[in-house]
Amino acid sequence: MSSIFKWYGDDFIERYAPAIPGSRDARERAILGAIAKYGPAGAADRARMGRPAIRYLDYDWSLNDVQQR
Image 1 (spheres, rainbow, N blue to C red):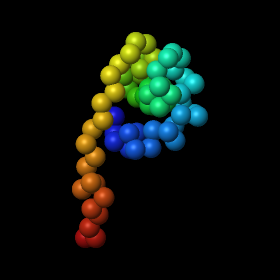
Image 2: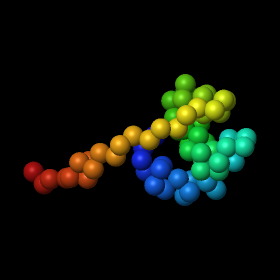
Image 3: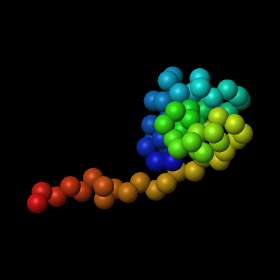
């Protein structure tokens, strides 16, 4: 997952956590709920079923370096 979810995961709880039942932390359920809604089919299926591990990617700050050409 993008580090954005690590930093702002609480912002997704109200909308996406209810999509994933279970006893996981609300933030984790929210992240999995977003994957279930927007992720590729295989990832969405794993998010809905089971207990997939959530790992965060390093954020690529160079994406913010926009140069005028």
